[in-house]
Image (cartoon, rainbow over all chains, first blue to last red; front, side, top):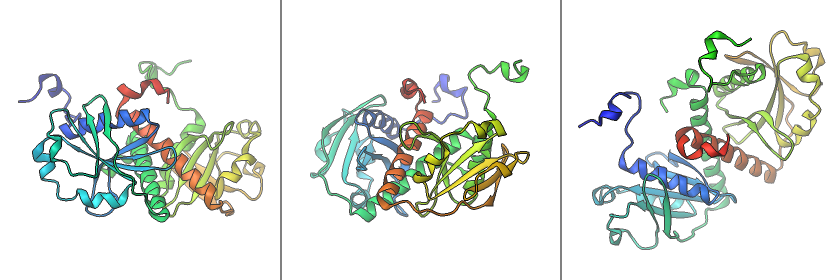
Length: 159
Length: 159
């Protein structure tokens, strides 16, 4: 059933549960002086929920799982490891965290904030790959910011 | 006198002439596959009108001058040269371009587009400084994009 308060806003898509977790994750990471983007594509066929860039160029990837089914349908997560220094899951406080693989980080999130319960182990990117990832991050963020500040021009981009 | 068409939109600041040139510059640079931000601070005391990041990590700075007085009051432009691979002025088609110093690039712009009349000479950044600038660009773009996509959280940032 549509939410009556939202049905009068047809141009505002209702966020999915995973997107609400991503919002809380991005808010929390700001308090660590990390900047964030959502839905970045590190390489063809992979799209990360949140990529975070730290003050010293640290690259973290956070996958947001709203349910057991959402987690169990993800066949790609191990492919993300080679694109970051640290990898985390973000789940809500009802998620059965025993399901999550060892050797990964864990955040408990809601739509408003998050908390890092377990740091992802560090596996540092090689300098050349870090350079590629920071460049991809910069271009992703700048294109979306351009679309936001000049929508009349960029509406054809489909971002 | 306020413009009647705009006075009903108190939250939408009217862009200054230089900002309209910057908009056209950013639109044009997109056609060269450069992404852009405005008002980036490379170092304390300097704020560039447009910083552009190319597909191979090229860093360009473009200063937008809406009038002779606007240009003549700029005492800082030489300080920008060390923060980019190429430096450009962007002016409208009525600007007396003879005023502009030799050895700089030139774009003719309006609010909708721009054209590169003269490439700025290349003076390549050292790798360490390029790394710093791409990181600054990424953080600047991501913070503004975060502010745009989650204004309820980031309104205190004052961006």
